[in-house]
Length: 414
Image 1 (cartoon, rainbow, N blue to C red):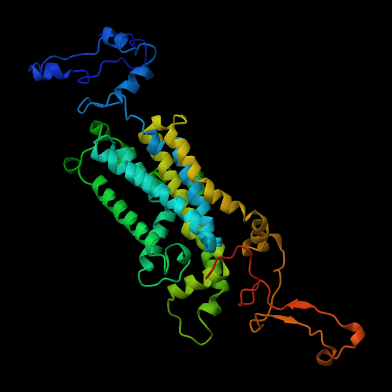
Image 2 (image 1 turned 60 degrees about the vertical axis):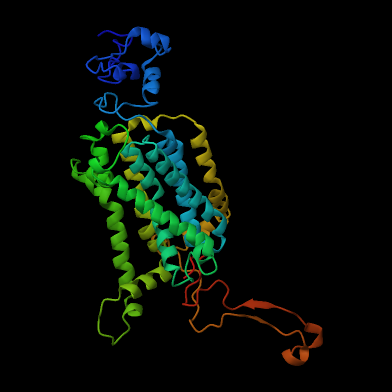
């Protein structure tokens, strides 16, 4: 059948999308009820296929064979929503590791982002207005490596309140800890529902799930894209993991006497290894816990959008997306306060000093007392004549970590 869109790449002839309720009530189930030119002109959908597609996506019919692919859902998978999630997670992660004492305000930004995605996902699922790919994207965006870290610390706070996230969910922070634990249970419940078989769950546009590799292998997409690539491309993809593994091996070798004191029988000490490397090489810990997992997380989301629902890459500044961008402002402002110390911290990293051949700032013996000493101003105590009285402060252990290494401005708390 020819329509006003016959010259486009796809003619507007949905297989069973345009049957009216009156026809169904009359029992005329055999009538095809195709979309006609008169219908399109009456609904003012004749200018472009995008107009018809927007109307089609208001309530996509079930069982039409998914002729146009997934409809977009910019409030969950829009470009600005994704960028806001990436920025918020990055800046909050920096504060968690390098400025945990000022985490309280930005911590709520991360919680707001998590709850907005989970509540949107749950509400649209209840109304049967959410596709499986967008439910997966919502859970993946909310369940970032930083979110998992917050969940684990909240659980740990039940029996141990002193830790890195203590100012946010530690001892005396019952309300925020409860909010985090509820979000964790909420996320797990939605994840279980999304992974249920098709006959036990209900999603919009279920026909689009068939043979959609973006849904089937969503969390493995960053690995699968290298399967058919040349060897040098596969090597580049594996390079971050190889460099991190080499850094761990070198760090363990350098600190082997601290992990296994002389005379001690060799035994695996994973907790001691972790604590030692966290104290001396915090950058390795940051890359292992946050850096690489976050890069993998971003790659999975972006590849999932590109493969399964490319229409969500359309740039459109909707209200929900603009609001999501403002969520990233508080952690951005907090992170900017560290800008003056970032260069000193970076230059004092072990691997940077090794490459640049810069000496360590200052080495002090471990027994150095951690206090400042003031020369007395009274000549009777100081042995200095009255005409040479003076007051001076000598910082004996200023900015030292207590283990002989000068504390970097951004070293995390132990």
